[in-house]
Picture (cartoon, rainbow, N blue to C red):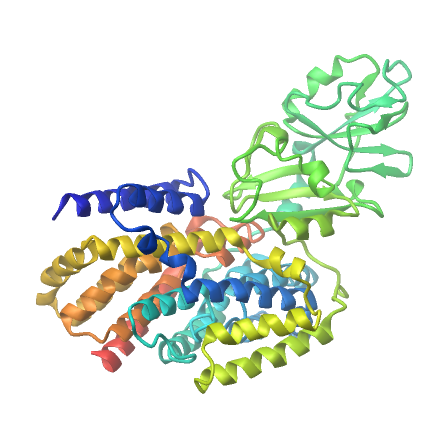
Length: 591
Protein backbone atom coordinates (compact mmCIF):
# COMPACT_ATOMS: atom_id res chain seq x y z
CA UNK A 1 0.00 0.00 0.00
CA UNK A 2 1.57 3.28 -1.14
CA UNK A 3 1.65 6.58 0.72
CA UNK A 4 -0.91 7.98 -1.75
CA UNK A 5 -3.33 5.14 -0.97
CA UNK A 6 -2.91 5.61 2.80
CA UNK A 7 -3.54 9.34 2.44
CA UNK A 8 -6.59 8.83 0.20
CA UNK A 9 -8.18 6.31 2.58
CA UNK A 10 -7.45 8.53 5.61
CA UNK A 11 -8.85 11.63 3.91
CA UNK A 12 -12.02 9.81 2.84
CA UNK A 13 -12.55 8.44 6.36
CA UNK A 14 -12.19 11.98 7.76
CA UNK A 15 -14.61 13.22 5.09
CA UNK A 16 -17.17 10.59 6.11
CA UNK A 17 -16.78 11.57 9.77
CA UNK A 18 -17.31 15.22 8.82
CA UNK A 19 -20.43 14.33 6.85
CA UNK A 20 -21.82 12.30 9.74
CA UNK A 21 -21.13 15.05 12.30
CA UNK A 22 -22.49 17.73 9.92
CA UNK A 23 -19.58 20.07 10.62
CA UNK A 24 -20.46 21.92 7.40
CA UNK A 25 -22.71 21.50 4.37
CA UNK A 26 -22.23 18.09 2.76
CA UNK A 27 -21.39 19.51 -0.68
CA UNK A 28 -18.70 21.78 0.77
CA UNK A 29 -17.08 18.93 2.74
CA UNK A 30 -16.92 16.68 -0.32
CA UNK A 31 -15.71 19.50 -2.60
CA UNK A 32 -13.01 20.50 -0.07
CA UNK A 33 -11.76 16.89 0.02
CA UNK A 34 -11.59 16.79 -3.78
CA UNK A 35 -9.78 20.16 -3.81
CA UNK A 36 -7.20 18.75 -1.37
CA UNK A 37 -6.49 15.79 -3.67
CA UNK A 38 -6.16 18.19 -6.59
CA UNK A 39 -3.70 20.42 -4.72
CA UNK A 40 -1.56 17.39 -3.87
CA UNK A 41 -1.46 16.33 -7.55
CA UNK A 42 -3.03 12.95 -6.84
CA UNK A 43 -5.08 13.58 -9.99
CA UNK A 44 -4.98 16.05 -12.89
CA UNK A 45 -7.57 18.86 -13.04
CA UNK A 46 -9.28 17.00 -15.90
CA UNK A 47 -9.58 13.83 -13.80
CA UNK A 48 -10.73 15.71 -10.69
CA UNK A 49 -13.39 17.73 -12.49
CA UNK A 50 -14.76 14.91 -14.64
CA UNK A 51 -17.93 14.87 -12.53
CA UNK A 52 -18.93 18.34 -13.70
CA UNK A 53 -19.43 17.03 -17.24
CA UNK A 54 -20.85 13.65 -16.23
CA UNK A 55 -24.08 12.84 -18.10
CA UNK A 56 -25.68 11.35 -15.00
CA UNK A 57 -25.13 14.52 -12.98
CA UNK A 58 -26.41 16.74 -15.80
CA UNK A 59 -29.49 14.56 -16.21
CA UNK A 60 -30.22 14.98 -12.50
CA UNK A 61 -30.09 18.77 -13.01
CA UNK A 62 -32.64 18.56 -15.85
CA UNK A 63 -34.93 16.32 -13.80
CA UNK A 64 -35.09 18.96 -11.07
CA UNK A 65 -36.73 21.25 -13.63
CA UNK A 66 -39.17 18.57 -14.81
CA UNK A 67 -40.10 17.77 -11.21
CA UNK A 68 -40.74 21.47 -10.52
CA UNK A 69 -43.35 21.56 -13.29
CA UNK A 70 -45.26 18.66 -11.73
CA UNK A 71 -44.92 20.19 -8.27
CA UNK A 72 -46.44 23.47 -9.52
CA UNK A 73 -49.22 21.74 -11.46
CA UNK A 74 -50.70 20.00 -8.41
CA UNK A 75 -51.41 16.95 -10.57
CA UNK A 76 -49.95 14.41 -8.16
CA UNK A 77 -51.64 16.18 -5.25
CA UNK A 78 -55.08 16.03 -6.88
CA UNK A 79 -54.78 12.37 -7.88
CA UNK A 80 -53.56 11.28 -4.44
CA UNK A 81 -56.24 13.31 -2.65
CA UNK A 82 -58.86 11.54 -4.76
CA UNK A 83 -57.37 8.15 -3.88
CA UNK A 84 -57.29 8.86 -0.15
CA UNK A 85 -60.80 10.36 -0.10
CA UNK A 86 -62.27 6.93 -0.88
CA UNK A 87 -60.38 5.16 1.92
CA UNK A 88 -62.28 4.29 5.08
CA UNK A 89 -59.91 1.89 6.84
CA UNK A 90 -56.29 2.15 7.94
CA UNK A 91 -55.14 -0.66 5.65
CA UNK A 92 -57.18 0.68 2.75
CA UNK A 93 -55.71 4.15 3.15
CA UNK A 94 -52.17 2.79 3.40
CA UNK A 95 -52.68 0.75 0.22
CA UNK A 96 -54.11 3.73 -1.64
CA UNK A 97 -51.11 5.75 -0.52
CA UNK A 98 -48.03 3.57 -1.00
CA UNK A 99 -48.94 1.80 -4.25
CA UNK A 100 -49.54 4.97 -6.34
CA UNK A 101 -46.58 6.74 -4.68
CA UNK A 102 -44.26 3.89 -5.67
CA UNK A 103 -45.59 4.14 -9.23
CA UNK A 104 -45.14 7.92 -9.42
CA UNK A 105 -41.65 7.70 -7.91
CA UNK A 106 -40.46 5.39 -10.68
CA UNK A 107 -40.76 8.31 -13.12
CA UNK A 108 -40.69 11.50 -11.01
CA UNK A 109 -38.33 12.93 -8.40
CA UNK A 110 -39.62 11.51 -5.12
CA UNK A 111 -38.65 14.52 -2.96
CA UNK A 112 -41.40 16.87 -4.26
CA UNK A 113 -43.87 13.98 -4.15
CA UNK A 114 -43.24 13.44 -0.44
CA UNK A 115 -43.24 17.21 0.24
CA UNK A 116 -46.57 17.59 -1.57
CA UNK A 117 -48.28 14.62 0.05
CA UNK A 118 -47.13 15.14 3.66
CA UNK A 119 -49.67 17.94 4.35
CA UNK A 120 -52.45 15.96 2.61
CA UNK A 121 -51.75 12.88 4.72
CA UNK A 122 -51.74 14.95 7.89
CA UNK A 123 -55.13 16.44 6.98
CA UNK A 124 -56.59 13.01 6.24
CA UNK A 125 -55.13 11.60 9.47
CA UNK A 126 -56.60 14.48 11.48
CA UNK A 127 -60.04 13.99 9.91
CA UNK A 128 -59.98 10.27 10.73
CA UNK A 129 -58.37 10.63 14.17
CA UNK A 130 -55.32 8.56 13.20
CA UNK A 131 -51.75 9.52 13.98
CA UNK A 132 -49.87 10.75 10.85
CA UNK A 133 -46.83 8.79 12.06
CA UNK A 134 -48.64 5.66 10.86
CA UNK A 135 -48.43 6.93 7.28
CA UNK A 136 -45.51 9.31 6.79
CA UNK A 137 -42.67 6.79 7.09
CA UNK A 138 -44.42 4.34 4.71
CA UNK A 139 -44.82 7.30 2.33
CA UNK A 140 -41.05 7.87 2.32
CA UNK A 141 -40.19 4.17 2.07
CA UNK A 142 -42.65 3.62 -0.81
CA UNK A 143 -41.12 6.52 -2.75
CA UNK A 144 -37.64 5.05 -2.25
CA UNK A 145 -38.75 1.59 -3.38
CA UNK A 146 -40.48 2.96 -6.47
CA UNK A 147 -37.37 4.90 -7.41
CA UNK A 148 -35.40 1.65 -7.84
CA UNK A 149 -37.52 0.49 -10.79
CA UNK A 150 -36.29 2.79 -13.57
CA UNK A 151 -33.16 4.64 -14.64
CA UNK A 152 -34.73 8.03 -13.82
CA UNK A 153 -36.36 6.88 -10.57
CA UNK A 154 -33.62 8.33 -8.38
CA UNK A 155 -30.51 10.44 -8.81
CA UNK A 156 -28.41 7.50 -7.56
CA UNK A 157 -29.39 5.40 -10.58
CA UNK A 158 -28.40 8.23 -12.91
CA UNK A 159 -25.08 8.77 -11.13
CA UNK A 160 -24.17 5.07 -11.45
CA UNK A 161 -25.33 5.20 -15.09
CA UNK A 162 -22.97 8.14 -15.66
CA UNK A 163 -20.12 6.24 -14.06
CA UNK A 164 -20.75 3.22 -16.29
CA UNK A 165 -20.55 5.51 -19.32
CA UNK A 166 -17.23 6.87 -18.01
CA UNK A 167 -16.04 3.24 -17.80
CA UNK A 168 -16.79 2.93 -21.56
CA UNK A 169 -19.80 0.64 -21.07
CA UNK A 170 -23.32 1.16 -22.38
CA UNK A 171 -24.75 2.19 -19.02
CA UNK A 172 -28.20 1.15 -17.77
CA UNK A 173 -31.12 0.75 -20.14
CA UNK A 174 -34.30 2.46 -18.93
CA UNK A 175 -35.89 -0.57 -17.25
CA UNK A 176 -32.74 -2.60 -16.56
CA UNK A 177 -32.95 -1.93 -12.82
CA UNK A 178 -36.52 -3.27 -12.80
CA UNK A 179 -35.18 -6.82 -12.64
CA UNK A 180 -34.48 -6.07 -8.97
CA UNK A 181 -36.63 -2.96 -8.49
CA UNK A 182 -40.00 -4.58 -9.20
CA UNK A 183 -39.56 -7.59 -6.85
CA UNK A 184 -38.27 -5.48 -3.94
CA UNK A 185 -41.04 -2.91 -4.47
CA UNK A 186 -43.81 -5.53 -4.49
CA UNK A 187 -42.52 -7.36 -1.40
CA UNK A 188 -41.64 -4.09 0.33
CA UNK A 189 -45.15 -2.66 -0.18
CA UNK A 190 -46.72 -5.86 1.16
CA UNK A 191 -44.57 -5.50 4.27
CA UNK A 192 -45.50 -1.82 4.71
CA UNK A 193 -49.23 -2.42 4.25
CA UNK A 194 -49.70 -5.51 6.40
CA UNK A 195 -46.81 -5.44 8.90
CA UNK A 196 -45.87 -1.77 9.00
CA UNK A 197 -48.84 -0.64 11.16
CA UNK A 198 -47.79 -3.09 13.87
CA UNK A 199 -44.32 -1.58 14.31
CA UNK A 200 -44.97 2.07 13.40
CA UNK A 201 -45.29 4.45 16.38
CA UNK A 202 -48.38 6.44 17.34
CA UNK A 203 -46.99 9.98 17.72
CA UNK A 204 -48.81 13.31 17.81
CA UNK A 205 -47.77 16.27 15.65
CA UNK A 206 -45.79 19.19 17.02
CA UNK A 207 -48.77 21.56 16.78
CA UNK A 208 -50.91 19.17 18.84
CA UNK A 209 -48.24 18.82 21.50
CA UNK A 210 -47.64 22.57 21.72
CA UNK A 211 -51.38 23.23 21.95
CA UNK A 212 -51.57 20.98 25.02
CA UNK A 213 -48.76 22.88 26.78
CA UNK A 214 -49.00 26.44 25.48
CA UNK A 215 -47.73 27.91 28.76
CA UNK A 216 -44.37 26.28 28.05
CA UNK A 217 -44.18 28.14 24.73
CA UNK A 218 -46.21 31.36 25.07
CA UNK A 219 -46.52 34.17 27.59
CA UNK A 220 -48.56 37.37 27.53
CA UNK A 221 -47.72 40.88 28.74
CA UNK A 222 -50.29 43.72 28.81
CA UNK A 223 -49.24 47.31 28.03
CA UNK A 224 -50.55 49.68 30.76
CA UNK A 225 -51.12 53.44 30.73
CA UNK A 226 -47.81 54.09 32.51
CA UNK A 227 -45.70 52.48 29.75
CA UNK A 228 -43.08 55.12 28.84
CA UNK A 229 -42.83 54.06 25.19
CA UNK A 230 -46.50 54.04 24.22
CA UNK A 231 -47.14 54.88 20.56
CA UNK A 232 -43.45 54.29 19.82
CA UNK A 233 -41.86 51.49 17.80
CA UNK A 234 -41.01 48.07 19.16
CA UNK A 235 -37.33 48.82 18.64
CA UNK A 236 -37.55 52.14 20.52
CA UNK A 237 -39.33 50.33 23.36
CA UNK A 238 -36.43 47.84 23.56
CA UNK A 239 -38.74 44.90 22.96
CA UNK A 240 -36.41 43.38 20.38
CA UNK A 241 -33.21 41.45 21.12
CA UNK A 242 -34.54 40.44 24.54
CA UNK A 243 -32.66 37.92 26.64
CA UNK A 244 -34.29 34.58 25.87
CA UNK A 245 -37.58 36.04 24.59
CA UNK A 246 -39.04 36.73 21.17
CA UNK A 247 -42.04 39.03 20.52
CA UNK A 248 -44.08 36.94 18.14
CA UNK A 249 -47.40 38.79 17.99
CA UNK A 250 -49.33 41.81 19.24
CA UNK A 251 -53.07 41.45 19.89
CA UNK A 252 -54.84 44.82 19.72
CA UNK A 253 -58.56 44.38 20.33
CA UNK A 254 -59.75 42.18 17.48
CA UNK A 255 -56.63 42.89 15.42
CA UNK A 256 -53.65 40.54 15.46
CA UNK A 257 -50.31 41.92 14.28
CA UNK A 258 -47.83 39.26 13.16
CA UNK A 259 -45.01 39.07 12.30
CA UNK A 260 -43.97 42.00 14.48
CA UNK A 261 -41.39 44.23 12.81
CA UNK A 262 -38.99 46.70 14.43
CA UNK A 263 -41.22 49.60 13.25
CA UNK A 264 -44.48 48.21 14.68
CA UNK A 265 -45.98 50.72 17.15
CA UNK A 266 -46.84 49.72 20.74
CA UNK A 267 -50.11 51.09 22.15
CA UNK A 268 -51.80 51.06 25.56
CA UNK A 269 -53.92 47.94 25.98
CA UNK A 270 -51.83 45.86 23.58
CA UNK A 271 -51.36 42.21 24.50
CA UNK A 272 -47.74 41.30 23.73
CA UNK A 273 -47.29 37.59 23.00
CA UNK A 274 -43.79 36.26 23.67
CA UNK A 275 -42.20 32.92 22.95
CA UNK A 276 -38.79 31.49 23.90
CA UNK A 277 -37.40 30.88 27.38
CA UNK A 278 -40.39 31.43 29.62
CA UNK A 279 -38.09 31.38 32.66
CA UNK A 280 -36.77 34.82 31.67
CA UNK A 281 -40.17 36.51 31.54
CA UNK A 282 -39.64 37.77 35.12
CA UNK A 283 -36.99 40.22 33.84
CA UNK A 284 -39.59 41.79 31.58
CA UNK A 285 -42.04 42.17 34.48
CA UNK A 286 -39.69 44.69 36.09
CA UNK A 287 -40.29 47.18 33.27
CA UNK A 288 -42.68 50.00 34.06
CA UNK A 289 -46.04 49.77 32.33
CA UNK A 290 -45.82 46.04 31.46
CA UNK A 291 -47.86 43.51 33.38
CA UNK A 292 -47.71 39.74 33.10
CA UNK A 293 -51.17 38.31 32.43
CA UNK A 294 -51.15 35.08 34.43
CA UNK A 295 -54.87 34.49 34.04
CA UNK A 296 -54.80 34.26 30.27
CA UNK A 297 -55.56 30.97 28.59
CA UNK A 298 -53.66 31.32 25.35
CA UNK A 299 -54.04 28.74 22.61
CA UNK A 300 -52.40 28.44 19.20
CA UNK A 301 -55.66 29.62 17.64
CA UNK A 302 -55.07 33.00 19.29
CA UNK A 303 -52.05 33.45 17.02
CA UNK A 304 -54.07 33.05 13.83
CA UNK A 305 -55.96 35.70 11.95
CA UNK A 306 -57.00 36.34 8.37
CA UNK A 307 -53.47 37.32 7.44
CA UNK A 308 -51.40 34.82 9.41
CA UNK A 309 -51.14 31.05 9.66
CA UNK A 310 -49.53 28.67 12.09
CA UNK A 311 -47.29 26.31 10.11
CA UNK A 312 -44.68 23.63 10.51
CA UNK A 313 -41.65 23.64 8.20
CA UNK A 314 -38.70 21.24 7.90
CA UNK A 315 -35.24 22.70 7.25
CA UNK A 316 -33.78 21.23 4.05
CA UNK A 317 -30.22 20.08 3.34
CA UNK A 318 -29.87 22.96 0.86
CA UNK A 319 -31.15 25.61 3.27
CA UNK A 320 -29.33 28.94 3.56
CA UNK A 321 -30.34 28.88 7.25
CA UNK A 322 -27.66 26.31 7.99
CA UNK A 323 -24.57 27.65 9.75
CA UNK A 324 -26.13 30.85 11.06
CA UNK A 325 -28.56 31.80 13.83
CA UNK A 326 -32.21 32.52 13.13
CA UNK A 327 -31.56 36.18 13.95
CA UNK A 328 -28.56 36.38 11.59
CA UNK A 329 -30.65 34.95 8.76
CA UNK A 330 -33.14 37.83 9.09
CA UNK A 331 -35.91 35.25 9.27
CA UNK A 332 -38.80 37.69 9.81
CA UNK A 333 -37.88 39.97 6.94
CA UNK A 334 -36.77 37.20 4.58
CA UNK A 335 -39.85 34.99 4.95
CA UNK A 336 -42.53 37.25 6.50
CA UNK A 337 -42.73 34.79 9.40
CA UNK A 338 -41.75 34.47 13.05
CA UNK A 339 -40.33 31.31 14.64
CA UNK A 340 -42.23 30.14 17.71
CA UNK A 341 -40.34 26.92 18.49
CA UNK A 342 -37.59 24.68 17.12
CA UNK A 343 -37.67 20.90 17.58
CA UNK A 344 -34.75 18.58 16.87
CA UNK A 345 -34.82 14.79 17.29
CA UNK A 346 -38.39 15.20 18.59
CA UNK A 347 -37.22 17.43 21.45
CA UNK A 348 -37.54 21.17 21.86
CA UNK A 349 -34.31 23.14 21.34
CA UNK A 350 -34.00 25.28 24.46
CA UNK A 351 -32.71 28.85 24.50
CA UNK A 352 -33.51 32.15 22.85
CA UNK A 353 -35.14 31.55 19.48
CA UNK A 354 -32.96 34.09 17.68
CA UNK A 355 -29.74 32.44 18.90
CA UNK A 356 -30.62 28.93 17.68
CA UNK A 357 -28.61 27.64 14.69
CA UNK A 358 -30.94 25.43 12.61
CA UNK A 359 -29.81 22.05 11.30
CA UNK A 360 -31.15 20.02 8.39
CA UNK A 361 -34.23 18.12 9.55
CA UNK A 362 -35.16 20.61 12.29
CA UNK A 363 -38.89 21.22 12.63
CA UNK A 364 -39.82 24.89 13.00
CA UNK A 365 -43.20 26.05 14.28
CA UNK A 366 -43.81 29.45 12.71
CA UNK A 367 -46.44 32.17 12.50
CA UNK A 368 -46.43 33.21 8.83
CA UNK A 369 -47.69 36.31 7.07
CA UNK A 370 -49.38 36.79 3.70
CA UNK A 371 -46.21 36.73 1.59
CA UNK A 372 -44.64 33.72 3.33
CA UNK A 373 -45.69 31.16 0.71
CA UNK A 374 -44.23 33.13 -2.19
CA UNK A 375 -41.02 34.00 -0.35
CA UNK A 376 -40.44 30.46 0.93
CA UNK A 377 -40.86 28.99 -2.56
CA UNK A 378 -38.29 31.46 -3.88
CA UNK A 379 -35.76 30.47 -1.20
CA UNK A 380 -36.35 26.67 -1.15
CA UNK A 381 -34.83 26.61 2.33
CA UNK A 382 -37.41 24.32 3.87
CA UNK A 383 -40.42 22.11 3.21
CA UNK A 384 -43.85 23.20 4.43
CA UNK A 385 -45.48 20.14 6.02
CA UNK A 386 -48.53 21.62 7.79
CA UNK A 387 -51.97 20.12 7.06
CA UNK A 388 -53.72 21.78 4.12
CA UNK A 389 -57.36 22.51 3.45
CA UNK A 390 -59.46 20.08 1.47
CA UNK A 391 -59.60 22.26 -1.65
CA UNK A 392 -56.00 23.43 -1.89
CA UNK A 393 -55.25 22.67 -5.54
CA UNK A 394 -53.13 24.48 -8.06
CA UNK A 395 -54.28 26.23 -11.21
CA UNK A 396 -51.82 24.59 -13.62
CA UNK A 397 -53.26 21.09 -13.83
CA UNK A 398 -53.55 21.17 -17.63
CA UNK A 399 -49.84 22.02 -17.82
CA UNK A 400 -49.18 19.03 -15.60
CA UNK A 401 -51.01 16.70 -18.00
CA UNK A 402 -49.10 18.15 -20.95
CA UNK A 403 -45.79 17.66 -19.13
CA UNK A 404 -46.79 14.10 -18.20
CA UNK A 405 -47.64 13.20 -21.80
CA UNK A 406 -44.36 14.77 -22.96
CA UNK A 407 -42.37 12.89 -20.31
CA UNK A 408 -44.02 9.55 -21.14
CA UNK A 409 -43.27 10.11 -24.85
CA UNK A 410 -39.60 10.68 -24.05
CA UNK A 411 -39.54 7.57 -21.84
CA UNK A 412 -40.85 5.47 -24.74
CA UNK A 413 -38.05 6.80 -26.97
CA UNK A 414 -35.45 6.06 -24.27
CA UNK A 415 -36.88 2.57 -23.67
CA UNK A 416 -36.51 1.71 -27.37
CA UNK A 417 -33.01 3.25 -27.29
CA UNK A 418 -33.88 5.89 -29.87
CA UNK A 419 -32.61 8.58 -27.46
CA UNK A 420 -30.29 8.58 -24.47
CA UNK A 421 -31.85 9.60 -21.15
CA UNK A 422 -29.75 12.79 -21.19
CA UNK A 423 -30.91 13.86 -24.67
CA UNK A 424 -34.51 13.01 -23.79
CA UNK A 425 -34.43 15.26 -20.73
CA UNK A 426 -32.74 18.07 -22.72
CA UNK A 427 -35.62 17.92 -25.22
CA UNK A 428 -38.22 17.73 -22.42
CA UNK A 429 -36.88 20.79 -20.61
CA UNK A 430 -36.47 22.65 -23.89
CA UNK A 431 -40.11 22.04 -24.85
CA UNK A 432 -41.33 23.05 -21.36
CA UNK A 433 -39.44 26.35 -21.60
CA UNK A 434 -40.43 27.11 -25.23
CA UNK A 435 -44.12 26.45 -24.45
CA UNK A 436 -43.78 28.73 -21.39
CA UNK A 437 -44.94 26.03 -19.00
CA UNK A 438 -41.92 27.02 -16.95
CA UNK A 439 -39.87 30.20 -17.35
CA UNK A 440 -36.06 30.24 -17.55
CA UNK A 441 -36.00 31.99 -14.16
CA UNK A 442 -38.22 29.31 -12.59
CA UNK A 443 -36.12 26.58 -14.22
CA UNK A 444 -32.95 28.03 -12.73
CA UNK A 445 -34.58 28.29 -9.29
CA UNK A 446 -35.68 24.64 -9.50
CA UNK A 447 -32.13 23.32 -9.89
CA UNK A 448 -30.57 22.35 -6.55
CA UNK A 449 -27.00 23.40 -7.26
CA UNK A 450 -25.74 22.18 -3.88
CA UNK A 451 -26.87 18.65 -4.76
CA UNK A 452 -25.14 18.90 -8.13
CA UNK A 453 -21.93 20.13 -6.49
CA UNK A 454 -22.08 17.17 -4.09
CA UNK A 455 -22.57 14.68 -6.93
CA UNK A 456 -19.88 16.21 -9.17
CA UNK A 457 -17.37 16.40 -6.32
CA UNK A 458 -18.13 12.85 -5.24
CA UNK A 459 -17.57 11.69 -8.83
CA UNK A 460 -14.18 13.41 -8.74
CA UNK A 461 -13.28 11.59 -5.52
CA UNK A 462 -14.38 8.35 -7.13
CA UNK A 463 -11.87 9.07 -9.88
CA UNK A 464 -9.17 9.71 -7.26
CA UNK A 465 -9.88 6.28 -5.75
CA UNK A 466 -9.39 4.74 -9.19
CA UNK A 467 -6.37 6.73 -10.41
CA UNK A 468 -4.33 6.22 -7.22
CA UNK A 469 -4.90 2.46 -7.34
CA UNK A 470 -6.83 2.55 -4.05
CA UNK A 471 -9.92 0.91 -5.55
CA UNK A 472 -7.88 -1.98 -6.98
CA UNK A 473 -5.97 -2.47 -3.70
CA UNK A 474 -9.13 -2.51 -1.59
CA UNK A 475 -10.85 -4.84 -4.09
CA UNK A 476 -7.88 -7.26 -4.02
CA UNK A 477 -7.98 -7.57 -0.24
CA UNK A 478 -11.78 -7.80 -0.12
CA UNK A 479 -11.81 -10.63 -2.67
CA UNK A 480 -8.91 -12.46 -0.98
CA UNK A 481 -10.62 -12.38 2.42
CA UNK A 482 -14.10 -13.29 1.17
CA UNK A 483 -13.25 -15.73 -1.65
CA UNK A 484 -13.28 -18.77 0.70
CA UNK A 485 -16.88 -17.95 1.63
CA UNK A 486 -18.05 -17.76 -1.98
CA UNK A 487 -19.57 -15.18 -4.33
CA UNK A 488 -22.66 -14.72 -2.14
CA UNK A 489 -20.47 -13.44 0.70
CA UNK A 490 -18.87 -10.91 -1.66
CA UNK A 491 -22.26 -9.66 -2.88
CA UNK A 492 -23.63 -9.38 0.66
CA UNK A 493 -20.52 -7.52 1.85
CA UNK A 494 -20.67 -4.95 -0.98
CA UNK A 495 -24.40 -4.43 -0.35
CA UNK A 496 -23.94 -3.93 3.41
CA UNK A 497 -20.95 -1.58 3.03
CA UNK A 498 -22.78 0.58 0.47
CA UNK A 499 -25.95 0.60 2.55
CA UNK A 500 -24.11 1.60 5.72
CA UNK A 501 -22.42 4.48 3.90
CA UNK A 502 -25.84 5.59 2.68
CA UNK A 503 -27.29 5.62 6.19
CA UNK A 504 -24.45 7.68 7.63
CA UNK A 505 -23.73 10.09 4.77
CA UNK A 506 -25.86 10.45 1.60
CA UNK A 507 -26.97 8.04 -1.09
CA UNK A 508 -25.10 9.69 -3.98
CA UNK A 509 -21.81 9.99 -2.08
CA UNK A 510 -22.11 6.36 -0.95
CA UNK A 511 -22.74 5.16 -4.51
CA UNK A 512 -19.81 7.07 -5.99
CA UNK A 513 -17.33 5.98 -3.31
CA UNK A 514 -18.34 2.31 -3.45
CA UNK A 515 -18.79 1.92 -7.22
CA UNK A 516 -15.08 1.94 -8.22
CA UNK A 517 -14.29 -0.60 -5.50
CA UNK A 518 -17.30 -2.78 -6.41
CA UNK A 519 -16.38 -2.62 -10.10
CA UNK A 520 -12.85 -3.90 -9.39
CA UNK A 521 -14.28 -6.61 -7.11
CA UNK A 522 -16.60 -7.72 -9.92
CA UNK A 523 -13.72 -7.95 -12.43
CA UNK A 524 -11.52 -9.94 -10.04
CA UNK A 525 -14.22 -12.34 -8.84
CA UNK A 526 -15.84 -13.06 -12.20
CA UNK A 527 -19.11 -11.22 -11.57
CA UNK A 528 -20.69 -9.28 -14.44
CA UNK A 529 -19.85 -5.61 -13.68
CA UNK A 530 -23.36 -4.61 -14.77
CA UNK A 531 -24.84 -6.81 -12.04
CA UNK A 532 -22.52 -5.25 -9.47
CA UNK A 533 -23.55 -1.78 -10.67
CA UNK A 534 -27.21 -2.65 -10.13
CA UNK A 535 -26.42 -3.99 -6.66
CA UNK A 536 -24.59 -0.77 -5.67
CA UNK A 537 -27.41 1.39 -7.07
CA UNK A 538 -30.06 -0.51 -5.10
CA UNK A 539 -27.99 -0.64 -1.90
CA UNK A 540 -27.28 3.10 -2.09
CA UNK A 541 -30.99 3.89 -2.51
CA UNK A 542 -32.27 1.47 0.14
CA UNK A 543 -32.00 3.93 3.03
CA UNK A 544 -34.51 2.76 5.62
CA UNK A 545 -32.54 2.89 8.90
CA UNK A 546 -32.08 6.62 9.54
CA UNK A 547 -33.41 10.04 8.53
CA UNK A 548 -29.92 11.08 7.36
CA UNK A 549 -29.30 8.95 4.29
CA UNK A 550 -32.25 9.96 2.13
CA UNK A 551 -33.98 13.33 1.75
CA UNK A 552 -37.52 11.92 1.94
CA UNK A 553 -36.72 10.28 5.30
CA UNK A 554 -35.58 13.68 6.57
CA UNK A 555 -38.77 15.41 5.35
CA UNK A 556 -41.11 13.14 7.35
CA UNK A 557 -38.82 12.96 10.41
CA UNK A 558 -40.17 16.04 12.22
CA UNK A 559 -43.81 16.00 11.06
CA UNK A 560 -44.13 12.35 12.09
CA UNK A 561 -42.54 12.99 15.49
CA UNK A 562 -40.20 10.07 14.84
CA UNK A 563 -37.13 8.99 16.80
CA UNK A 564 -34.09 7.22 15.32
CA UNK A 565 -35.30 3.96 16.85
CA UNK A 566 -38.54 4.20 14.82
CA UNK A 567 -36.51 4.06 11.61
CA UNK A 568 -34.53 1.07 12.83
CA UNK A 569 -37.59 -0.82 14.13
CA UNK A 570 -39.57 -0.27 10.93
CA UNK A 571 -36.73 -0.12 8.42
CA UNK A 572 -34.48 -3.00 9.51
CA UNK A 573 -36.85 -5.78 8.33
CA UNK A 574 -37.34 -3.88 5.08
CA UNK A 575 -33.56 -3.48 4.62
CA UNK A 576 -33.08 -7.23 5.10
CA UNK A 577 -35.89 -8.00 2.61
CA UNK A 578 -34.34 -5.71 -0.01
CA UNK A 579 -30.83 -7.12 0.55
CA UNK A 580 -31.92 -10.77 0.30
CA UNK A 581 -33.94 -10.21 -2.89
CA UNK A 582 -31.24 -8.05 -4.52
CA UNK A 583 -28.39 -10.45 -3.77
CA UNK A 584 -30.47 -13.44 -4.91
CA UNK A 585 -31.45 -11.85 -8.24
CA UNK A 586 -27.92 -10.62 -8.97
CA UNK A 587 -26.47 -14.04 -8.10
CA UNK A 588 -28.93 -15.83 -10.41
CA UNK A 589 -28.73 -13.40 -13.33
CA UNK A 590 -25.16 -12.03 -13.34
CA UNK A 591 -22.85 -14.65 -11.78
